[in-house]
Amino acid sequence: MNFTLSEEHEMIRKMVRDFAQNEVAPTAAERDEEERFDRDIIDKMAELGLMGIPWPEEYGGIGSDYLAYCIAVEELARVCASTAVTLSAHTSLAGWPLYKFGTESQKQKYLKPMALGEKIGAYGLTEPGSGSDAGAMKTTAKLEGDHYVLNGSKIFITNGGIADIYVVFALTDPAAKQKGTTAFIVEKEAPGFSIGKKEKKLGIRSSPTTEIIFQDCQIPKENVLGKVGEGFKIAMMTLDGGRNGIAAQAVGIAQGALDAAVAYAKQRHQFGKPIAAQQGISFKLADMATSIEAARLLTYQAAWRESEGLTYGKESAMSKLFAGDTAMKVTTEAVQVFGGYGYTKDYPVERFMRDAKITQIYEGTQEIQRLVISRML
Ligand code: CAA
Image (cartoon, rainbow, N blue to C red; front, side, top):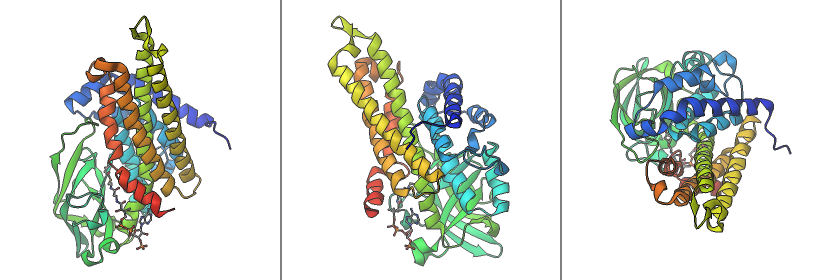
């Protein structure tokens, strides 16, 4: 076994860390407050090659792997969880199914501009009545001539409204449920496609989350992704990898909170010495650091397995479960270390705590991760 990162991974970490500190961190609090997405940040990420990390150069990527991608998500989340999830949904929820199931022409037409950062991707599975029970979706797609006509709506879509390309799932054979589900590539300009309600959220507030609506929405037949009837499996396989991206986001959020808590504990004096020198705080910091390290190892392991072509569904569910809970616990403790100051917007830890919560919910709640893991035992 070798736990040392390669030179390439270390280089990507350093590059993203510098970028995150210089270009993302300065406006993170303000974008959170104003619920504002900043396309300039994405354009700069594109210049660094971050919008297509795991994809081969022929598809506009930088030809690296899933570990490098997770490291990038982690480093962004360390300062801004919103920017991290924009990248995560774009890469693992939209890019991955295009890369794995797209035809050569679909990859050239959709994956390439996404990997180059010219276009942003999103994924549409959840509906008002089907969250954890993804197989209960109602959106339909009916073949009419050389087009499919989609009707229905999807909610809680990360990158909704800012994305150009949506990978969505709809019933082509409603009676067959999961086996009658098909994946489609929907361009934002498709007739009958529109953006609905924008959510006002507790956290990740500079990452837009919207409803997307299909009203007799016309999708050319050639925009079926994979085979007709295989959509549910594509959706599930996509989430297998996507969940590890969320684990990486959770590790980053937790690390950002720990960094802030350690720095504060060293300079804050009470009872005549720094609070870091008092066991009530130092033991807390030690526990936080230990949990983060365990979460990071699970996350890197799942990413490594995916890069090596090994199975990774169970490991991704485990990393997401453990890292999400770690992020929530660590950020809550970080606020505690800061005391009253931590509860204010003068310090970033309250934002980290609000941002952490979603990692226990999206891409499958913690309860769904346990269901996925236990089914594989
Ligand atoms: N890989 C390949 N195939 C899979 C699979 C996987 N990971 N998981 C299931 N399948 C296959 C099964 O083998 C089965 O196929 P066969 O009948 O041919 O054997 C078929 O899919 C149906 O599977 P299940 O019977 O297991 O289906 P289910 O209805 O019982 O549901 C579930 C399983 C795991 C609970 C699933 O509904 C699920 O993952 N729910 C959570 C959904 C979720 O994570 N939503 C998040 C949306 S994305 C998001 O958060 C928004 C964002 O933008 C960030």
